[in-house]
Each structure stands twice: as C-alpha cells, then as structure tokens.
Length: 278
Image (cartoon, rainbow, N blue to C red):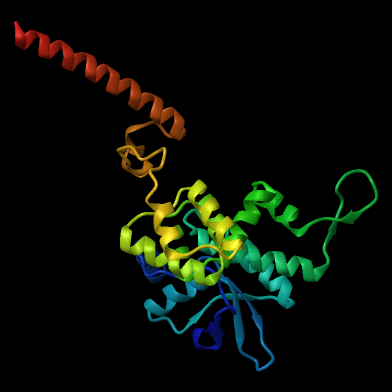
C-alpha cells in the first residue's frame, strides 16, 4: 500500500484520464470493493514512486478520497517502463487517435533505443524494424502504424478534429506533412468555413505546401471544391442499434439486415398507398 501523494504520473503520459461515466463507475466500484487490481509503479531516486500502469485507478482513488492504493513495485529502465505503460493502455476499447499516435511514437523510440532484435524467418537473426514489431503486436499493418505516428506532427487544433472524427485519418496524415504555418492557416479556414478536406484535397495542399506555394486563398479554393461523397447521409453509431441484434453480429451483418427491413417496409408502404388510392 503506497500513499497516493507519493506517486507521480508517468512523464508525457499520452493517455487522457477523463472524469467521465466510466470513471464514475470505477469510483463506485472502489468505494464498494476497493482496488481489485494493483497499479504498477517504479521507485524514483528520491524514494517516491512513478506510475507506470494505473493512472485511471489513481484518479478514481483520489475522487473516492482514499489516501493510499495497492501497487506492485517493479524495477524498470526508462525504456522498459515506457513499453509497459503503452502496452497496458493501448488495448483499451475507447482510445483516441491522438492517444494511440503518441503512445506508438513513445514505444517506437523506446524499442529503437533498446536495439531490439527478433527472428524474421529461419535465417540468422537480423534487426527488425521497430514499426514491424508494433504492427505485429497490435494486429495492424506497418503503414497503419506509420499513419498513426504521423499524427504527432499535426498541430493541436487539427489533431483535436481527428479525435472528434471531423477529419479522417488518411487526410490527416497528408496534412501532417504540411509546414506548421500552413497547418495553422488550414485550421483557420476550416473553422471559418466549416469544411474539412478529403484525402485528395489534403494531398493537393500537401504538394503545394512542400513546394512553398500554399497560400490562404489556395486553401480556400481547394476546400470549396465539391467532394465526390458530398451527398446527404444518415449517420448513427453502432451502439444505438446493437441491442436490437443477437450478440456477435458484425457491423456488416447488421447493415444487411437493416437494408432488408427497409426494403420490406418500402414494399408495405407502397401497398398501403395503393389501397388508399382505390
């Protein structure tokens, strides 16, 4: 049991600790049952501790007005602590693109510093790209890992729009290659015109930015172009309809069923219109 006041947060911790509904649930659970899973910390030179895994539990304990919490004390190097911190957080269900981006970047840098080597095939051991290691661990392509890491080059305003799903990942990656000044100009134009770029528009702006030719009027001109997918859409999250389907149904399966139900509804509606017209 370690006093909470003696536990500092991990430096540059990329994961947000939000006082949301899940935090309220965690606080209620801690008040009723205590902390079920100890946090992982490491001891600092001054005798205090640094949180490695358990920032949300620490915050919940503070809200619950506890003065100490159960912890496992591990001896870890900076790089080992970084990798463990990322691995214990990045698999959470709700994680923002910005959180994943900075977490991947921190882990990439830690692996590179460690000079980690793994077997690629049956051939002699060779150094493997750290991006490949992360891609395998988290079940995604190396290009997808690189895309997330590129997000760390966005300014805060544009990155926030990615988190809010106002800018998609691929356009955001293209924008990340633009100069900081051009990113600021783009953000201003987006906010004034309430228009976000498609991947093609982002690529066009990136090309001009890299040549030093992207001016504000050009940004406005590119964003004013009509996008191929600019059609009215009905959007809602899966959570709003998941309760109406059996467990385990994929999103594609649910879409197929909803489309079929709408077709049947349309047929019934047409029949009703014909009956009323008689």
